[in-house]
Length: 199
Image (tube, rainbow, N blue to C red; front, side):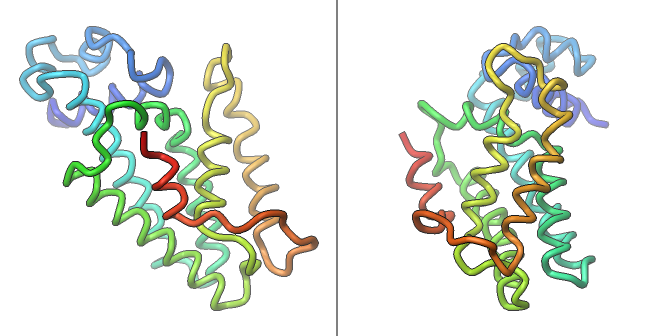
């Protein structure tokens, strides 16, 4: 694995465990590189955070695309994607997207558009097949994934991991048609999430 890839993988792990303020020295140590190598690839923390966010969005988009291509049942594809996205611990990375993070930086925008298109495609297929309740939208699932995979304050990620897939499956059962009740409020769209995520 090239140095840049090792740094990004180590940074993702460190950010999941300790947040965006994880020590860059520790990230370099985990990656098996010197500090100079880290700074040669990423001149500052902002550049590294941006690369990690783009990397995670790309991996989650790939999961959605693979699930759509490989699963004949549209709801099985949606379920598979949700569990794979949970394994990426997307919620632990959400705090890095606040503050001065540039959501419109071209690399970030392209990764976001690819991810949103892939997830919307999964929802559209499941809805067309009659397998998805009509009063749910992609934003509902992504919000739940964010909440389920964000560590509780004062707890380590592994303590939370025991329950993520169990609770996610409960949620997915609730998304499957026919719904057993009427959901309060309105479906959360990806546009809603985009607006809410802006400072």
